[in-house]
Image 1 (tube, each protein chain N blue to C red):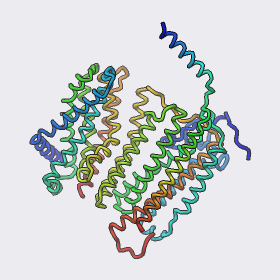
Image 2 (cartoon, rainbow over the protein chains, first blue to last red; image 1 turned 180 degrees about the vertical axis):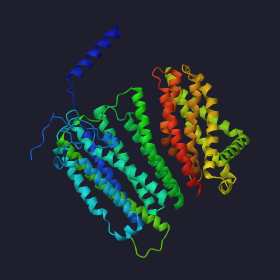
Image 3 (tube, rainbow over the protein chains, first blue to last red; image 1 turned 180 degrees about the horizontal axis):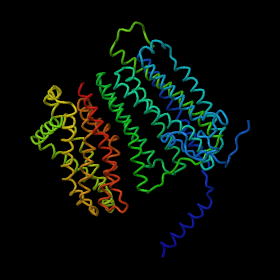
Length: 58
Length: 302
Length: 222
C-alpha cells in the first residue's frame, strides 16, 4: 500500500532527525538579540514618552 | 577572572517566575540547611541576593508611598529619582554585557538562555508594579489622598509597559525553546489576563474627565484587577492540572551561581529603572492633577 | 436591608416586564453568537466538544448588552439621581440590581440551553440537575461584577467598549469554570471534576458578591 510506504519513510526520517539532536538548543542568537533590542526599545521609547509628556506640562 | 565554565553541578531550580508567586526561598536542591541557600552575589553564606532584592523593592515602595504625602514632597523637592535612574541605566548596560558575553551557556537552552536575564526581571518588576498599583488604589480608597491616585496611575501604566515587554520577551523565549510563540499554560494565561485588567483600568482613566470620579472608579477597577490576579492564577492552574493535557513546561532547567548573580544584577538594573519610570510618571500625573485643581500651596513643588 | 433588597428587585423586575423586548433582545444576541460559532467551525465533528464553551461565550457577550441596558433605563429618564436620593442603603440597591441581572441571564441561559444542545449535537451524559446549578452560579458570577462596572461605564463615554474590556478579564476564572463544568456534564465526567469547578464558581461568587457590594456604596456617593 502506498500510504504504508509513505508513512514508513516519514517515520524513518523523523527517527533520524531525533537521533541527531543533542538535547540542547543550538544557536538562536537572533532571538537573544531580538529580546535585548526589544528591551531597550521598550525602555527607551517609554522614557521618551515620559520626557515628552513632562515637557508638555511645563 | 576566568569565565565560569558550563557546570553540570547541582544548582537551584531555575523557575524564578514561580518563585515570585510562592515566595522565597524557592524549592530546589539546597546546599546545606540554610534557608537562603547560602549563596548570593555577595559570596558564600551571605544574605541571599533575593532578600536584597526584596529589601530594595520594599525601600522603593516606601519611598513612593512617602513621596505621596504632601509633607514629604515639600521636604524632597529635588528629583531624587534621577541618580537612581542613572544607576539603573549603567547597571543595565553592564548587565546586558554580562548576560550576552560573560555568563556561560545554559545546559539545555544554550545561548537562548540569555533571554532569561531580561525576561525574568521583567516578570518580577511587572508583578511589583501591579502590586503597587493595587496597594495605592487601596490606599486611595481609605485616605482619599490625591498623591496616591497619581501613584496608582503611574504604577498601572509602568506595569502595563513592563507587562507588554514581559509577554513579548516570553514569546521570543518560547519560540526556540518550546517551539511555539504562545501556549495556554497557567502562568501565560494569568499574565495575559492581568495585563488586560490593567489596560482596562488605564482606558477607564483615559475616558473619564472628572477628577473625583476618575479616581474613585479607577481605584475600584484596580482593586478588582489586583484581587483577580491570584484568583485567575489558581483557577487556570487548577484547570491545567485537572486536564493534564499538557504538562506545565518549566522555562529552563537548572542554573548555577555563575548565572544567578548575573540575573540579580540585571534585576537591580530593572528595579532602579522601574523606580525611575514610576517616579517620573508620578510627577507627570501630579502636575496634571494640580493643573486641573489648583491648590494654594505656600511654595512651588517639584 | 433584606426588605429593601427585595423591593429593589421587585422594581427591577417590574421595569423588565414593562420592557419585555429587552430580554428577548439579549436572548437573540446570545443565540446569534452561538449560531455564528457553529457556522464558523468548518469541522462539525468538533462541535459537540465546544458546546459548553460556546454557551458561556454567548452568555458572556450577551451579558454586556443586558448590563448596559439595565442602566440605560435609568439614565434615559434621569432616574439615576432619584435612585441616589432614595433613603435606601446603597448596598440594597446593588444587590437588588445584581439579582435582577442574574435572573435575566438565567432566563436567557435556560432558553439557550436546549438550542445549544440541539445545534451542537451535544450529548447530555451527566446529571442535568448539575446544569441548572452551573447556570445559576455562572450567571451570578457574570452579574455581580457586571452590575458594578455597568454603573461606571454607563456614565462614561465609550461604554460599549469599556464594559467588555473591564469585565472580561475579571470573569475569566468564572467563565473557565462554568465552561469546563458544562462540557463535563455534556461529555461525561469520569474523574468527577464537576464538583471542583462548582467549588471554584462558588468561591468566585462569594468573593465578588461581597466585594462589589462594598464598592458599590462608594460609587454611588459620586
